[in-house]
Image (cartoon, rainbow, N blue to C red):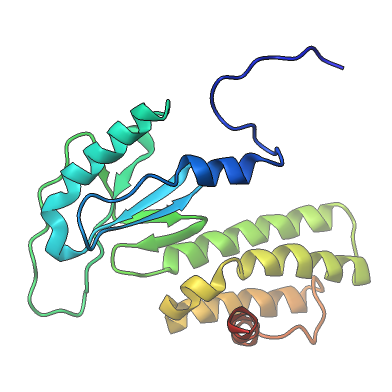
Length: 214
């Protein structure tokens, strides 16, 4: 048994009180301007600003920085990015606002494990997930797993990767994205990684959406 160590800051990862402490710690972090919104997930915070409030960006960023200082925290600007979502179908193009100093503007961002572009495309996410799943298959085959055991692990690992947060991004997927996902499943069936009666990609997504709303 180790000796006790005094901790005057931070939240111990994996502790029972951790989630509650995180909620209490971030409770007083709010936006400055009406219409803006903050989504807080532990140390991942997303500031959403509509076009009508575009001039409030610097003020909101300064407010978050000051809040962090008061709470013995530090806003990591190196890991902070700005993305401007645009409607590609609009005929009238709106000029983008001037970039904020020290804040990198990106066209692709990963939000809680889901990659999305500034045009609300999830094609990069689908490509990355399929590549990641292909690596998993190589590992499974290298371990000599076959038949039932292989099928069970495929469903619990590979299918879980394919469908991760699909209820959030599946609506943005175009036909090409869906076809790539289904082609991967079809190839897995041909090579014996999964059961031949495994549902198709669209059926999986529909089932997850139904479960979510139920």
